[in-house]
Length: 151
Image (cartoon, rainbow, N blue to C red; front, side, top):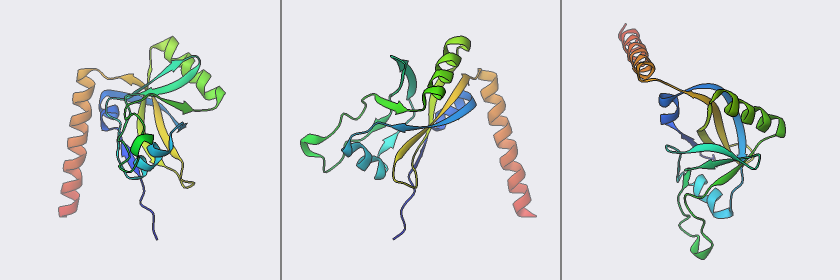
């Protein structure tokens, strides 16, 4: 029996931000949350990460309630703790304080061991003209690919 790969992307993140560095973090979850993620019922568009008491938390990540969860179900938009090594946490905290960068969730996935992981990125906000340039480059790349397929 082949397992389905769970790969939930935050498409707004790459449009609104320029990603400077990427990290993979574990997530502290309840039992019904991991079951809901395995069913593909999660979304990341308005989520962001912040520090509280030297710990990294993600806010705005929506994991839908598990259908068979009964009274044990979780709150869909609760804040979840991210698990990183202390060295990585210190680096992220220093960069966000010094240079005004932000941390955004990029991809939520299930690894080979069956654990939910969140890829986060140290990001810098794009200006409006940067977003336009990104769209122009993407359109030009798409046109070149179409032209190559026809020949």
